[in-house]
Structures are given as structure tokens and as C-alpha cells.
Figure 1: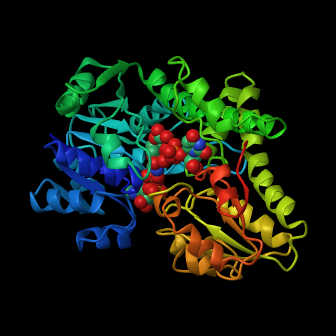
Figure 2: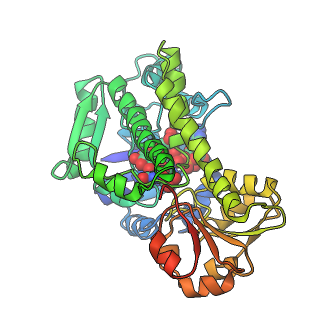
Length: 433
Ligand code: NAD
Ligand code: UGA
């Protein structure tokens, strides 16, 4: 099927490439000319494992192309996805101006029946606004349907998540749109459940799912705080909880809290839309608060180790909001490093992929190093913020030698075993253990 994706960011590029991999003909559109130029020249503007090879393969096969021209893409496509960013406004609500702008542009260039699908994460009832916008700007008699198809991929695992999803959710309001959408996802129908709902339910499924996952993380971080006041170990508690199939063992990893471009913004947007609909979603406010407190708690752990941070050198391992991405949006490392700097510490830091993006966000005083060993050299404390595989596998003997005595580690992701670290001669502090 011929398809266009407007917005070629993390979601647009991965979705477009994977739809091409499933055999469709896809045009990825973006108004960022520099981004489109990079893609046309064979570059990839983001770090996402496996994506580069898949883009190359599908471009070569003639199924995937890149453009800045919505009009031309619309002419050639039956289904048009809106995958633009929906960032938070200062009051926490979702900024839908990019969704509105693209809806308007689509309306003004509708060449015949098209399905306009929101893949961006949007508050419930945004579909109605997209429809109103298209009605307002489209030529009279223009034929189209609006649909919602929220995306559930995770950064770092995006390609696999898209091609092997737990479910596909499609929100439609007509049989015609339903058929088009089912045709598009036909190649996945053997391996996953395709849930067809109305548009509002589909929109709500996305906010409800992300908020639930964020709630699980804050819940286990709250439990970790209780564990720290007792002899309990949060890793064991999480395992014991997770063995109950009704709870499940995913997203119960206590640590430095959640970050990223989605959980924080989707929580606040969900709280906002709930309030506008007359419901006070206090539960989610608490989820946010626990997450904010958790980052402060990591700084407290550094203080509890070194007492006074003024003049101390801290080695920070990991800057990205999670491993296998270069994405720094709302990364816990940002708040933690800023707080450590405020306390008078100096920071050496490294990240396998995110250092270039981190430089644009963090204060200039942060010193960037090539790897964990160079970062640890001459530091009073090593702080693990992102659980990259290479930190799990690092040579702890070398780290011990590189650190000042006594060698101290605050493990903000519980990647090491406390007993083992003690045996190796570290002053070690994890989370909730
Ligand atoms: P992003 O910022 O990486 O990409 C958005 C792209 O849209 C940018 O390249 C931007 O230039 C482009 N754009 C903005 N306005 C445009 C316009 N008028 N015309 C053409 N292009 C335009 O964002 P993202 O991370 O891909 O997220 C997109 C949406 O998907 C958000 O709503 C997000 O919540 C949702 N989402 C993201 C993820 C994720 O892992 N990043 C996962 C699921 C859902
Ligand atoms: C999340 C969801 O998992 C995706 O399903 C969703 O599509 C996406 O948001 C989105 O809407 O953008 P993502 O933000 O890429 O995906 O990454 P996650 O793996 O969910 O991790 C988010 C944050 O939670 C990271 O900072 C991670 O370190 C933290 N986390 C995760 C924990 O602290 N503990 C856990 O047990 C799991």
C-alpha cells in the first residue's frame, strides 16, 4: 500500500522504515530540510540499533523515500500518518500546534479519499479536532477519514517493537478506514492482536498505557525507599511481586527514575486532559512527585557517601535517559548533574552515544571522557545513571585503581550485586537494597 508519514523523527522514521520492510511503499516527510538531506544522503539523524541497515535495505528496494513536500506525498499515498512531536506546554498540556499545522496542510492538499491517521501521542478527543480542522480547510466535498493508531515502540528497541508488537491499536469511525488500516497491518496479523476501537478509545489506550508503566516505576521506587529503611532488598521484592502473573515482572526496576521524551510529557498531558474533562487525576501527580524525588534521592546518596560535595570530583556513567539511545530528552542525568554541580562538585561524564546531545544541554563545566575508565580517573565517587551494557561488563579492577581511595560507587540502576562489590573492596550504595 502507498503510505506517507509526516514527521520523520524517532517514531516517523522507524514506522516508515518498518512499513516499507512489511512491503509497503512509504514516503517519509519532514519540514526539517537538514534532516531530509541527511536521510537522502544515506545518513541517519538518530542512534537506534538496527535502523540504519533497514533504511538502507528499503531505500535500495525502492520502497522508502524522503521528502519535504507534503503535497506530492499526499498525491501518491492512500494513508497519511501524522507522527509529529507533541511536546509539553509550560502548563503541562500537550502542544498540538504541529498536529494542527500538518492537519491543515493535509486538508489544503487533499487530492481524493485519504485516511489521515494520528500516530503522535495525543490527548483523547484530538481526533475530533483533526476532523474539524480538515473540514475547515479542505475543498468542499473532499473525501477523507480520520483514524488513530498510537505507537508503543520503545527507543533502543524500536525496530523490534514495531515489527513484533504486543498489540496494534486502530481507532476508526468508518468501515472504509478500518479496511485500509487492516490492509496496512495485514503482514502483522498472524503474530499480534490487532485491536480495532473507536478513535477516543485508541487515543486513551496510549495515555493510559504510558501512565500505567510510569506508575509501575514510581511504585517500585517508593517500595525501594521503604526497603532502604529495613533489611529488605528491592530486587528480591520486585522479583517476588513479578512472579505473580497479574503483576508481571516488567517495569519494576528501581533506580534513578524514568525520563525520556514520553513518560514525563504524557503524564502531565494526561493529568491536564483529565482535569479538562472534570476528573482530578491525583494518582498521576503522585507518580510524577515520586519520580522527581527519586532523582534528588540519588544526589542524597552521593552526599551520604562523601558528606560534603564541595570540591569533590564525581564520575557520571551514562547520560542518555536509557541505554541504546542517544536521546537526552528529560534524562534523569540532567537534573542529577545540575544538582551535584549546585552542591559544588565537579563532574566528569561519559556515554557511549549521547555525549554530543548532552553537550547541548548540560553546563559547559562538565568534562566529557571517552569511557568509564577515563571518567573514573581521579574521581572521589563513581555514579551510574544509565544502565548501558558496557558498564555492566566493565573491568572493576581497573575502575577501582582509577578512583581515589576509598573507591566509592553509587549505583543508580542496581547493575551490580552489593555483596560482590563489598568483597571487591568498594564502598557501594545501590537503590533500595
Ligand atoms: P521527534 O521530535 O523525534 O520527531 C518529530 C518530527 O516531526 C521532527 O523531525 C519534526 O521536524 C517533524 N515535524 C514537526 N512539524 C512538522 C510539520 N509541520 N511538517 C513536517 N514535519 C514536521 O518526535 P518523536 O519522538 O518521533 O515523537 C513523535 C510523536 O510520537 C510524539 O507524539 C510522541 O509522544 C510519540 N511517540 C514517541 C515515541 C518515542 O519513542 N520517541 C514512542 C511512541 C510515541
Ligand atoms: C516508553 C514506553 O515503554 C513505550 O511503550 C512508548 O511507546 C514510549 O514510551 C513512548 O510513548 O514514547 P521509552 O520512553 O522509549 O518507551 O523507554 P522505556 O523503556 O519505557 O523507559 C522509559 C524510562 O523508564 C527510562 O528512563 C528507563 O530507564 C526507566 N525505567 C524503565 C525504569 O526506571 N525502570 C523500569 O523498570 C523500566
